[in-house]
Length: 139
Image 1: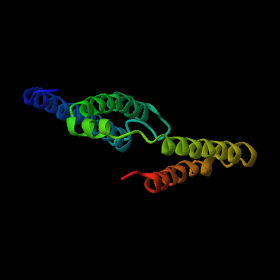
Image 2: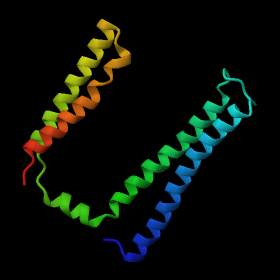
Image 3: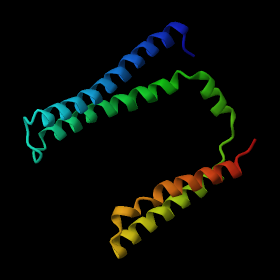
């Protein structure tokens, strides 16, 4: 589907884009440390944090866009995924597990005021989905 030249050209763009994103994140962290460390802003000032978050807000879409673009150049993965029959059973069960996790999250938060610890249901739900996926996976 893609020539070697096209793939190499994209891989070069991909490396530069990821380096740009990482650079923005590092720049944000450095300016935060520098501005607070040099006491240019006091501890109550949010300007360095806003700068950090702004740079992260620029970096994250770069990661997402180029990550998605990278997957379209991976022909082996595409062929592997295209040859498999989708297993709707695993997706449905995992969907139910995560919906139950969301119900538990809201119940713990709303009725017990445990918002600060209720988030733990999501990683647990994800782990249960992984277990279900392994058990029901077709070889």
